[in-house]
Image 1 (tube, rainbow, N blue to C red):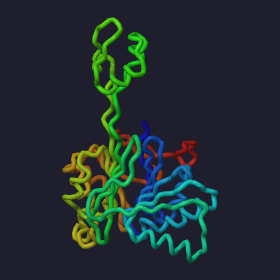
Image 2: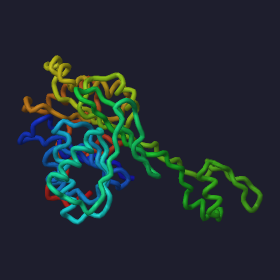
Image 3: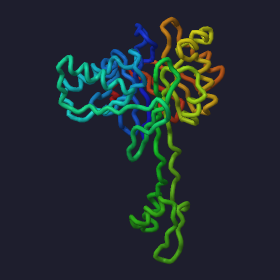
Image 4: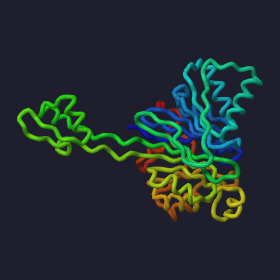
Length: 319
């Protein structure tokens, strides 16, 4: 089942000709989630052929402009495009007032509902759940109150092999029992164990988004054993003191978080505009954590594998 992350923006603070401010789309089981919404996000959604109307949930990590100033444009465009479906926005409690006052000042009356859910700045919190996945927020260590987000698949039940359904003429109720790990008694009186006919389900995958944050032991605990993480790497190690005073991380620190959290894959991003060569971030991180990759606009990462790919601007691929 689909679980992928498409990068829309991975630059820090001011946008540059090379990178847009923070934004990405998580496609989990064909449900689209927008994570952060810096300036120009709706243009990036169009550029990379993401169907905006399929986004029903927006997660904003914090109220620094490079992470949310594109939100009102996105909300307004959904209205102009005829949206009727409710949009749920998750973020710091002050974000609701920002949305409300802008709608009031512009006398914009939306044709759809915007529901707001405040994230906790004190603890890890379940903020969204459906039958196949959960989304958690968790505190990060930044200059202002900031949250990361973790997307987690729920464990799936094993599948009964099709040939065995036909072979043993299994009834729906028997299939349910077998998938739940129970043994059943066949018409001939013999016992059939779940392990005899079921294919184990794949291990649940998870993705954690760590936007602006200094190195944090608590964050390591929150994201432990995630299949994939995105961790900011604003600076190189030569600017370690600058990272400390601004509550950001270096590429080495991001890699250390990945290594200590025992994650499967690390995506580096939120690069400072002072650097012209992103490859230095990868070089620094890879020395500590091998499965590290550079975020870049238009690149899609498959959660649970180590093979990202870039979408051509002219591609027919649509999320």
